[in-house]
Amino acid sequence: MRERKAWLILHGKQALNEEVRAAVNGLRERGWDLAVRLTWEGGDAERLVGEGLAAGYSTLIAGGGDGTLRDVVEALVKAQSDANLALLPLGTANDFAHAAGIPLTPAAALALLECEPVVVDVGMAGERAFLNMATGGFGSNVTANTPEELKKVLGGAAYLLTGLSRFSEVRAAAGRFHGPDFQWQGEFLALGIGNGRQAGGGHLLCPQASINDGLLDVCIVPAAQDVVGTLGTLLSGGILGLQSVAVSARLPWLEVEALEGLDLNLDGEPMESTGLRFRAEPGALRLHLPKHSSLLAGQVHRAKA
Image (cartoon, rainbow, N blue to C red; front, top):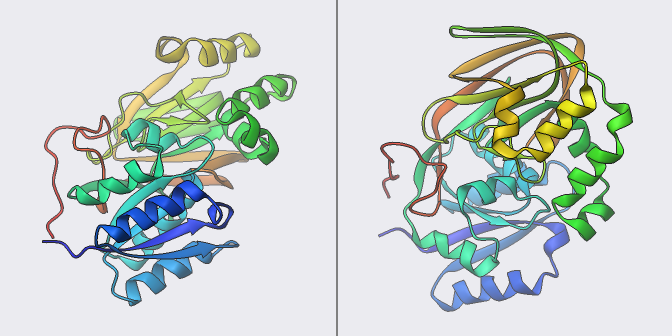
């Protein structure tokens, strides 16, 4: 039987969240040793992961949005740890949680600690990790430039409103893409490299992606003469709209070259690069997920206690 103790790394903005406090106290009343630590600034998540592992906690919880989850995942990958990870989704978009079927209420999300963790993949962009998706082009600019105040009021819809307001600024990026039996070169409006399925507040860029197949799903939206029309199709047409305009592939790795530089976003973390190798790192993480999560494909490997 697994030890009933966990180390919660909670985004500092959630310190006064009464629903989180009630969920934590509920777990403690059921016999869990649940320690809580808060992040305050960049680098805190990595430091707190190290402290939790050093203190003997074999189960960690990332409490926050997609960015907090990415920070904790990257720290676990760097530490080469076999600790289990659970997600307490408290962000604006919660894209990974939505796609994975993780409940958005704190008590229900923490109840997944009772489920056996599943061995899943992690995406890598160079040496940077991401669990959900790397995006590039117009979509990543929208994510990076959506004001915090707007996200508080509108939630995930804030990304769409920001995108609509910035149509006049849309310009294509140029790149060369190369992977096993796959090549594409040209100008594009949006790029998604998915371990998970959706980004930017619910846009399904990689609707068939799975997090335990050892592959990354690639979605490239080529630039068209009618830029606004293409983006309108993408934003309003759902999966069918995406399939009508996108180039797609499923690959273990992908190399991207962009001589003029490419703005990227890794689960909420902005970065810029002129050349980068993306790869799937199979079985790199032990994650608590709902038993029938739609992100799991084929044979599911439950982590051994």
